[in-house]
Image 1 (tube, protein in one colour):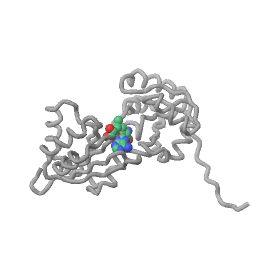
Image 2 (tube, protein in one colour):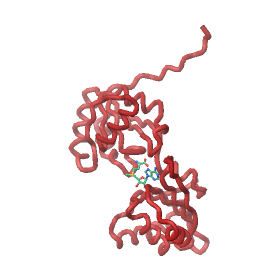
Image 3 (cartoon, helix red, strand yellow):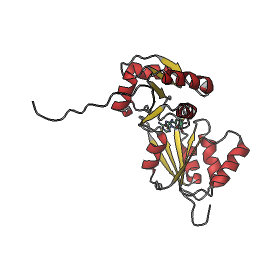
Length: 240
Ligand code: SAM
């Protein structure tokens, strides 16, 4: 007997909603606690049950899956809350990263808290944090924008409003609109430093840095696809 204390993680708490972060590309980024919660819970509410099914299969986990996505959030939130009230342990996951961050989750958290249900985060991968911390842009103060609206006029207005916000701006963008967004940044923030974090944690992770015009020039030389976090450095002395 070595006498070394053995770390025994505390058991999960019945009637708790666990918000479980999952990898944003690299499966090694799942945490030990995430795996334990997914193994020990009664049910997993998932944005896309097929997608999460594949993740669970990879880790040898079998659990009842409930579909919980943007289009059934209101109805499903009530069902999940009922389960929690009966003492079940429910884990909420999204397709990638942290639930509730540009992903379904907030409505369920609000509904659970309103009924006095315990909500516990199981932190892990989040594209916003991964991108910002390695961007080289100021991290002390930042503003997470998430996705811009789709309509051109609304996007331009939103970028204009955001120009007065101090700190680094962090946006998510789909592969279909990323080139357009860089063009919009060239109009709204021509002098600011922009960092594009592409395919984080994946084989073709890449970082592109420069003014919007410099990034556009790189795009012409070699078009890029994939998932992107877009970060815009703080205002320059000229105020743009
Ligand atoms: N909940 C997720 C999180 O915690 O980051 C975000 C989900 S949101 C629907 C998906 C967006 O996140 C993508 O369009 C992209 O902007 C960003 N994203 C997710 N994974 C990424 C990755 N591996 N590399 C770069 N951006 C990523």
